[in-house]
Image (cartoon, rainbow, N blue to C red; front, side, top):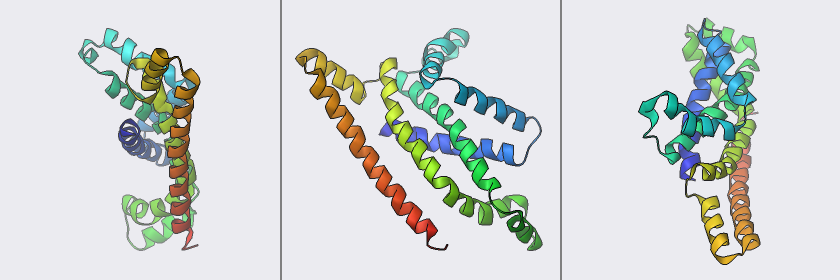
Length: 199
């Protein structure tokens, strides 16, 4: 949960930045965002984690001290920021142009219009997909096991190896993930109801 929480914050911030690069079509930054999103959506998360943890330290010796937990958080952040960026971009683009025009008529700058009017409306549209990516991120933390992080999958593997109760160990992991996801699904439903009250 700690890994998912930290990665979720970084991923959301990076996703918002990438989405704004795309929405405002900023020179060079827009092209960078397109390539970034294409790469991280087009390659498996496991491969990205291996490149980050095992590959990059060979190219950049300064990364040799990178621990498995940090590498997992960075990998999850980069991977899911690409997906979240597209959701945020689509949500912002779904807001009618008249909303922007009304803001400009009141003398707001583009950033003020975005912060005060557009983003609050876009949040309602983007929330379901953002929550789905958060849930997917929580489940994807199990891949940190492949880098040597002693998270729940690693603990289950060690328990199963010592007791030979593989079914019980991994069923317990599945039930824990299911319970966590059920809680976040309920939170998503409550958030959607709250944001929809004005509509």
